[in-house]
Amino acid sequence: EVQLWESGGGSFQPGESLRLSCTPSGFTFSTFAMSWVRQSPGQGLEWVASISGSGDKTDTADSLKGRFTISRDNSKRILSLQMNSLRVDDTAVYYCTTGGTPSRRFFDFWGQGTRVSVSS
Amino acid sequence: QSALTQPASVSGSPGQSITISCTGTSNDIGAYTFVSWYQHHPGQVPKLIIYDVSNRPSWASGRFSGSRSGNTASLTISGLQPEDEADYYCASFTGRNTLVFGPGTKLTVL
Image (cartoon, rainbow over all chains, first blue to last red; front, side, top):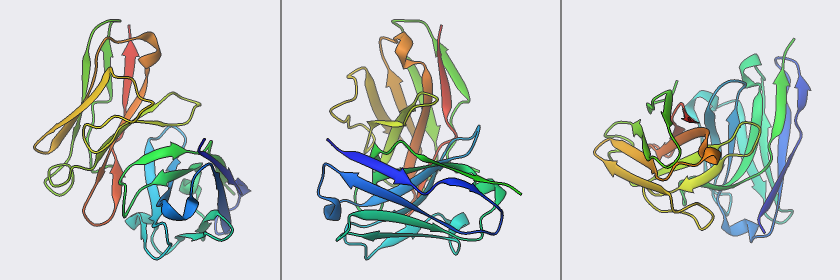
């Protein structure tokens, strides 16, 4: 059974940085592209970033480039999202998912999400 | 601001069929067969129900079907059931190695 567990969320102030992590189980991690998707309060889903199975290719939403960085450590089986210069509108539930660019352009398995709140 | 457009809401009675549209451009939906649909019950995790325009994952009900014509993709739910009441999102590959979601459609089962 595929399972994804996110961690690292919490309450932060504007300008701070944080790193979200996702720990997978139930599949061969290194062979799957992975992504982050977020949902702000009262808003819809928003694709954040994707990374290839090997980690050599990443794609990030234009509006988040330069602040958010997706990465993975296949030896430790961890997916990460480094979030810098946090803004109030980064407040959202962040989901770790399988799939995304560059291979399967859809998100088939989702974690429960980790909540990030940014306020002064 | 989404590059895809969906109706804000649709409704139907149990047993009826409804269709949700997702309109993009010739740079996304019109150019690629990478359209997916997600069902999201508030408070729960979004669930993939259609991928690559019309393919259904093993866990999705056969009452869900997808199609595409030009720059518009569609999700049809047949034999509406009360548990189908949820938010539905389309998503598309854009060709600049990015993915975009539609704003979502709230389905009400009357």
